[in-house]
Length: 110
Image (cartoon, rainbow, N blue to C red; front, top):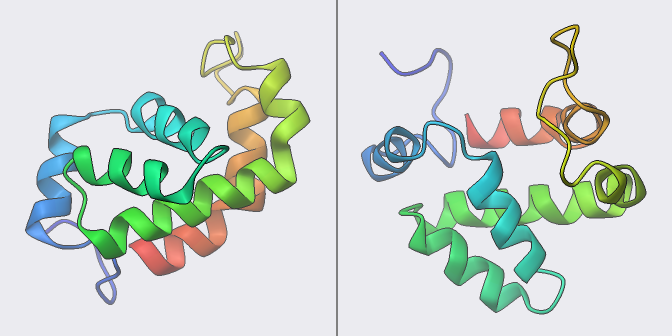
């Protein structure tokens, strides 16, 4: 069992395999998101190269685009910050991503 509830865009065995290959998708997806500054095509190719199916890569792309729209300043200030603060909470960029992009991503990608 990989999740509960209805399957989403990232529920295929191929996507699961990509998630297993990259235990933490933050860094590789961030690199793809930076490519999205220049070209959606480059970002999608990057996400596909991680092993994601096209529908899953699209939701990851839209997630990075929304996070850029909502959290760019915060994320640029935290680009080299550890993922977690000393108290264990997420850094400000990741928290902004969770708050602003996470709900839709989780609903669609699950």
